[in-house]
Image 1 (cartoon, rainbow, N blue to C red):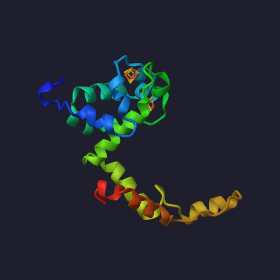
Image 2: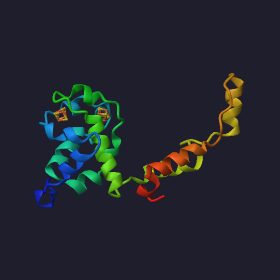
Image 3: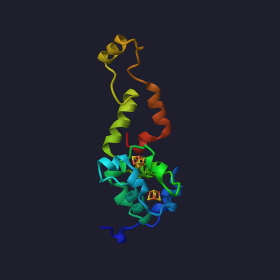
Image 4: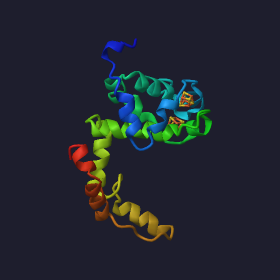
Length: 163
Ligand code: SF4
Ligand code: SF4
């Protein structure tokens, strides 16, 4: 049930100002994006059309606090199918970016930022992995990549996710 009493009419304009968000205003709700979405195929709780619709209606807290916003795999199938030429994948990204800017970053993403800051990777490279690489003739890789932490610092993401 949508209660428009809680709607924030400025929300769609805020998203339209974000990189990749401008074309949200062209959406006429046809649902082609949802029909072509492979994530929705496996989990019907995820629906890009619904996210866009709720954004247009101003349901800011409902959109930003939804765990489903983060289900998008950024595969661009929706972008290919949108009859309005809306870069839907970029639009979903714009909403995610706005969510992070406004303190709605999910815990799982914060942990990923922490790992990147610490190791420059999401997964630890262990001696076992290095031996396996050597065995199949691949060159060794560094266990940590300090440059990644510098990049994270420059982007300001650490402050945004409270790290
Ligand atoms: S396919 Fe495009 S116009 Fe149709 S609902 Fe999705 S974003 Fe809106
Ligand atoms: S980019 Fe996201 S919303 Fe679009 S089809 Fe792929 S998973 Fe679905």
